[in-house]
Length: 61
Image (tube, rainbow, N blue to C red; front, side, top):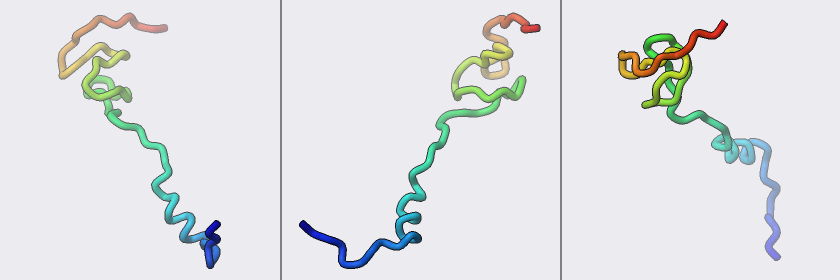
């Protein structure tokens, strides 16, 4: 079985792992109310899509 000749340094190990991170895809802000929504969907907070009201949303108290 092969064994590494030299130990991998902390810097090398951490540089290799810099790409192991989470990121959110396709999230943007609603132009009408500013809520964070998925792209190309109707805003669940205000009911607007592409500057027009598409659905009527009940107001929460």
